[in-house]
Image (cartoon, rainbow, N blue to C red):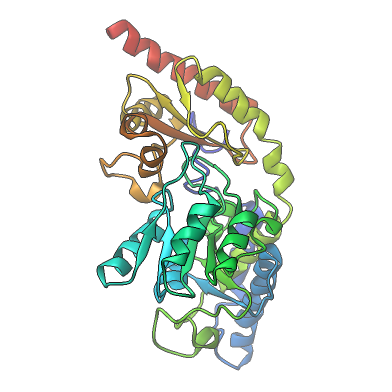
Length: 373
């Protein structure tokens, strides 16, 4: 059980508990390497060594040259940095809000944007993407997640990369949910790649944008010459140290997450009595389950399960607190399925007992609703 007391935490896509080695690395950096990494004196050099080690670890995780990445405040900034200067964008409404909102802002400024329909299973057809890019200026960006943040549906990135490059486009991959769960070869054809530390048991407040083939981003922040002038501002050596440890852990975590699949399937076998699994017919990350339960609004079921000590979500954590239904499930299967959807996401520390507690809690909640009806 992850958490304290009677809490069962099944919302690992929202954030992950920092790994103990991450916490220790950050503690040591705060104590020993608190200097400004841009300073040339010994205090600055100690901080700089943490940055360099982290850069090497993140580069290895993404399989890019360590020089070809820039640290950001997280996945949101990384996606913004990749897209803000695009001459055109092609994407679907199932992308993360940090991608969708940038595309909407670009469109409001007159930048051409093509919205592509996904299949009922949530996959983006490569042929439709190619056709959209042909209508956009040369060098436009296709923005595609490695795996969806709400359903776990994995996009066919090798096919998509081939389609994008065949018409002179560039591919940006939001790998925030895929990294550490999919082999890095999955986004080998990407021109830019976004990642966030707190999704791989690292600290909040730091992420990265990496690039290949000369796809160097245009700065979003203006200021000093840090990070080759691509992202101004003083970096925190403690956050970098934690990110570096998390990245090294994530390079070996694909097998750990594959082992979680049986627990995910155990949950879904129990839930299908009450509802439908969204995206079940497509390849999915092994730890994510998005289900629509008839007779319940998603946010109400999340609240009822929380009272039972089980933490799940009804969509992207970035949309928490709003009454908006899941735009991902709505785009796939319509508004009614979206209104009743919840997301369960497991982690490498999730146990069979955690899943059984969640199943028991769901049965209690649904039984109360039946008896009251």
